[in-house]
Amino acid sequence: MALDVTGLNFSYGEKSDLRNISLHLGGGQVLGIVGPNGSGKTTLIRCITRILEPSSGEVKLDGEDLSGLTRTEIAKRIGFVPQTAYIDQMPPSVYEVVLMGRLPYIAWNYTERDREIAWEAMRDMNVAEYASRPFNKLSSGQAQRVLVARAIAQGARLIMLDEPTSNLDIRYQIDVLETIRSTVKERGFMACLIIHDLDLAMRFCDEILMIDDGEVVDFGPSMDVLTPGNIEKVFGIECVVNTDYGRPRILILNRCANVGEMEPPEEFESPTC
Figure 1 (spheres, rainbow, N blue to C red):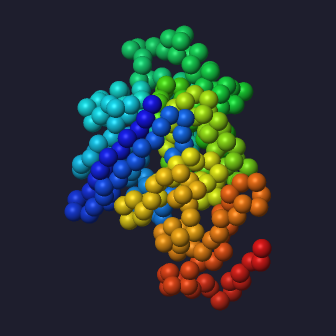
Figure 2: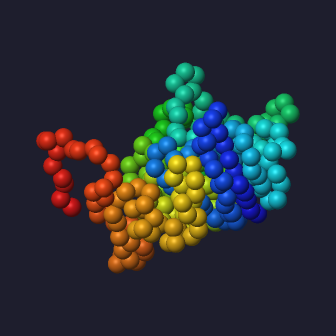
């Protein structure tokens, strides 16, 4: 199992948003996509899932070029987990949300096998106990696990996650990322996620794609990419990689003095840590 992206380019009109993006991801691996706001991260995962049509380049899943597949065929191979969105009018139950993952396979009605797969995905993501609860009554962490369960129910070989830890407190961030990572390892599929917390990216991602202004800055194992030099270059932040606590950790020090012109308000006081 493998995802191969080669020479991917995308443009909105005359503006070039992605330029020559290439990466390789193997089965059982988690890829973290990192970069500043507006660097092209969301555009990239939309091109990989064919929500957007690349200007040029190839996206292959297990050697199969996705450009020749229909939307339904792609949905059987790739699951997309957006940032949590609640449905306020006539909200579906958790079970109904997860069962939607079987839509690419049904001709008319859900089969008993579809229902079994949905229940299995809910058990894997520890949300089966919420099956009858309205989706919009879940916490952010619970809702995110439900959306991952829906992608698993699709039978997807690749799951794309757009900021799965946004709006979550640190407990739920770790809970969601631990669940994604363990499920990927156990089932042998792949996950690509946009993530802003670089320390969590180092902890939970096997590979890191660092992009800036639509171009690859670095790609490879997390320890090789998330270096103080790369982080200072892309984010304008001074940091160190600390190994005193049993695993590598990124400790932020200061914003580089020569990056940006924004000054804090007069009443702002720097916190002491």
